[in-house]
Image (cartoon, rainbow, N blue to C red; front, side):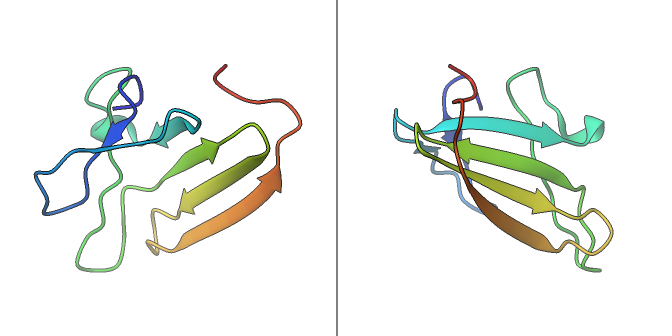
Length: 87
């Protein structure tokens, strides 16, 4: 839940919260969007996924977590923030 800054890991009921200083933006497949603020990226046994991107940023750093829909490959890229997003 982007608005509440909360997330859950697969197989867990426990809700985890992001630190206040971390902004999050989620881009996910339409089929995985539960609302404007909630969505998911799912992985399947054949190695594929629904794909998507999670952007986590602070005032100084940004991490882009890209998930390839075909291969399920996760790529994390780090960059320096020039302008904070979501603020």
